[in-house]
Every structure is written in structure tokens, then in C-alpha cells.
Length: 284
Image 1 (cartoon, helix red, strand yellow):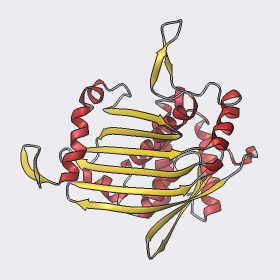
Image 2: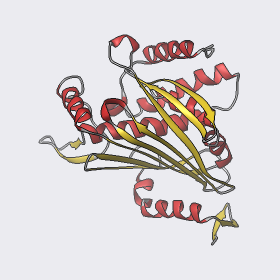
Image 3: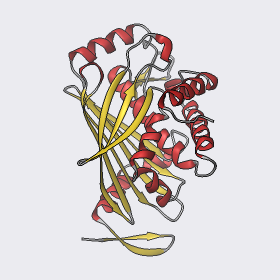
Image 4: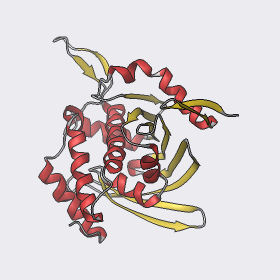
């Protein structure tokens, strides 16, 4: 069944997937209009029996075709994920079951002595209609006994220049990850916060979620901003585009410095360019 959608006054038929995605825009309409993040964006997260789920819903000032070009190809999705400061490498392999994104996850600074972990995401493009794109990434396991990773990205046009996007990120954690997170939160991560307000302090200021859920919210936001940064750069040589995307991602995350600041720009670029060199990708 098709539904009617009007773009810039021109009505067209839309797929069920696009209609379902746009329904969430209605549900979160007030949050999107409030622009609490400085843009029409809403973040929601849940934690239930060791399963963490975070979702970003946003209106992008970028054409659907531009966003769909990024999401429809494994190489660009891999390069997009690489912008995250904890993704130390991402390479695509292809087999009979479709593309696989081989990701190395590690500390924000390579010389810190912390461990690096390998993950393999299977990529599946569920739909590539003219009004909807759906992509799923799934990995059976991750660092410290975490498992069942899922990344879901959906996009549909709002008009000729804007796209409505859903970015979902989820995984399950066990006792080892919970113990490691407890140690982290008692030391280096004791001041780390997420985006969801869970109460009010004695000073009247909001108190934000911490712990595993706070960590999830930071990562889903970093990944969303990676997509936004990657899709916003479309001109220049491949090397110049890479550098522009790194700088754009850093600038976007600094808008939410209370949650996302870890390194200064020089340190971030130094780490990422060293990663590119190890991957055999020209940085300049």
C-alpha cells in the first residue's frame, strides 16, 4: 500500500517504509521543534535486562539523494564510522553474503596502553526506494563480552533539500562489561554524562544519565554526527574530503562538549592521520 506525501507542494506516492518513518516525526514533533540540541533532533535511549538501545531522530539540511549515496555503499559507511574517535580502522571485505565492515575499536589515543578489539559488521541494504533507504549493520560480538550489536539507519526526503533520518544503535552487555564499566566510572569516567536529564541537582541544574546508558547515548550521537559530517562534504580530492570530514566531525561534537569532548583538534587529527597511515590510506 502507498501513501501520499507532498514535497514542496508536489504530491507523490510513498512507500510503507517511508510512511512508517515519517510517523515517528509526528510522534516526536514537539521535541524536534524545540531544537534542544541546536537543531531539529531528538535522542531517546533505553536499558532493559542488559540490552542498551539508543535512537536519534533528526531533520538534516541535506538532500535525500546525497544522504542515500553515503548510506547505500559499504565503503562510504565504513569511512563514515571511522570518524568516531574510538574507531581506529575500518575496512570492507566482500563475500557471497554481502559486504562486511571490519572495525578496530580502541582507545582515543593509541599510546594509552588500552586494548584494541576487532568487530565484524555484516551490512544489509533493506530498501533503496526513491523515497526511502534502510540499512542494517549487525555484529555478533564486541569488546568485553558485549554482543548482538545492531546499527539501523533509515532516511526519507522531507523536500528537495531536507532529509528525515533515524539512526539506531544497540547492543547487549554481560557481567564482564558491567564490571569494566564500573571500574571506568569510578576512575576516568566518573564525570562522564549522557544527554537525557534524569533529575535536578541541589543547584537547580539538570542531572544527566551516566553509566552504561550514558555511554550509549554518547556513542549514538557520535555516530549520527559522523553521518552528518561525512554527507556534508562532497567536493575536493579524496584526501582533502577526508580531512574536511574529520574537521567537520570534530566541530560538530564540540557543540556538545559537556558530553563529547575528549581531545583537542590537533590531538584528534594526529590520531586519525596515524590511523589512516596504518590503514594505507593517504592522509594528505
